[in-house]
Image: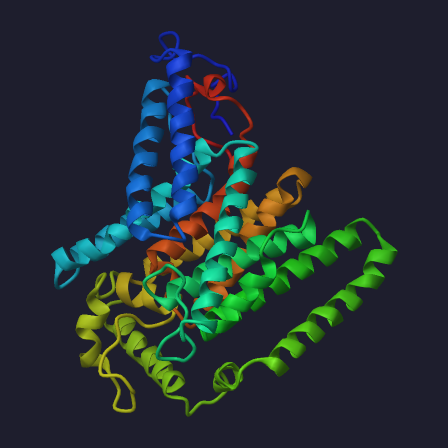
Length: 424
């Protein structure tokens, strides 16, 4: 975790002790932690409040770094994420409308969530944040159910959206939180709100989130089986098929009693004549055309919608689209193939980091939740550009950073004066 020559977590900074007194440093760290808890709590409630609190978190985290003479340390997957951000600026420079592209590219600032969480959510704090995520998610799930059952948010034209501004954001957040709940239920103690999360997600009519959640929960089940096999637990292995059958039977029962609007939405997933399915196929050709003409830097952030008409095939349903409803395709078309390669490196590095932490009992539930989040993002991202959704992106980054942060179980005074990068 520390670079060569640092002397470990208690080593002093060159030139003497930390520039801040231990008490001051501890108070800054505590204030930053409190702001981080607030940020994570409101992330699923209000993007405006979350943005304000994130600014406070980053300011306090920077104060800890500067006051303690600590070089910021980051988990390994932040390196490709930073490189992706840098290439995004290259694509901005190559855009036909650089100012508009630069404004749209501001989401790369959200990547700073990773070092802030890594620095402030150390040790047991990481599990506390996961509980906050799960508890708030369960509460927003109840809001969505009430919207559907009482307030008539019960059709495609008016879907449950919790406290979010859009049902896609709401369903994406539910999908991630469901992975946290599933990780705790399968690998640790049962978590609150799992049934409500599943019901609320079903009621959003959002097929991409259904696919993502199914992929995430399936991965968690496989991880559970792998643990049973590793322990050579014959009884547990015998119960695994029974558990799988019970889950399948429960899903089948839920499908059989679901409202017709929900079941029709499920069937539409496999209907190639469905207008949204046809339009997504058209988007693939639009994106392929953009990548062919602009392979290195793409058309630029925010330019897909501007140039959509120039690439739109005749059989497309919509005249234009804000994005291509596919994460890899959107990144390649908007920022170029190098950006797609860097994003792929980030995903691979995040999975490798989480897999290492999954092998450690102390961080296993957090790592499983992170792996479920990445899996859900990838699966749902084949049908929706969720990586470009600010609320979704921030929660994803929180979840994949928590297992690494949990390993940094040391008070801030002990890491003050440490110089060197993390070795993840």
